[in-house]
Length: 179
Image (cartoon, rainbow, N blue to C red; front, side, top):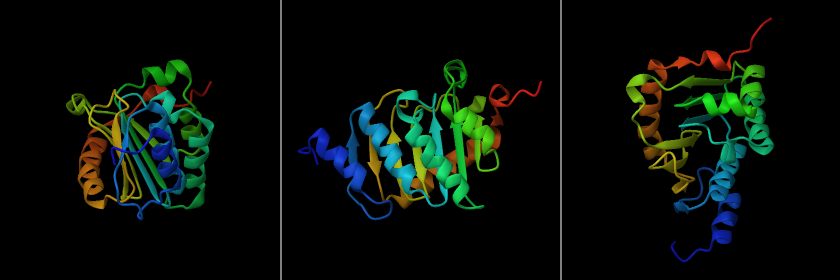
């Protein structure tokens, strides 16, 4: 799909359906990553798993994304949003919107700081409903791939996610201070 323009990719990202679109879409810009993340999160029916270095502001810290995960969280008592973050300092310092959303919906949205054993893991990903995937081979770069139907790859990444999740702890800096 090398012949697609950036606007072609953006349109496909916005119109593709989780579980139905089979052609991987190459992501080459922060805008495409933002559009892909929003498109997938907006379609989530059960779960979102995010493994990120800093939960990048330019992708995840916007009203539309927060509305999508809030909608999922309140849509079902079985909804689950789990986020693993390597470095929470930028989120705390810059007031990431996810912090207050997570505090309000703590039953459904949980975040942990990546355990010391997994700090060298260089990839980042978002998985929706164990089927759709945004994957970055290098977490600090916006180049990646969006796959709207990749259950086998999601399963493999989720095994790693859950292994790290169990070893990781909630970040004290993200808790509400009761004064």
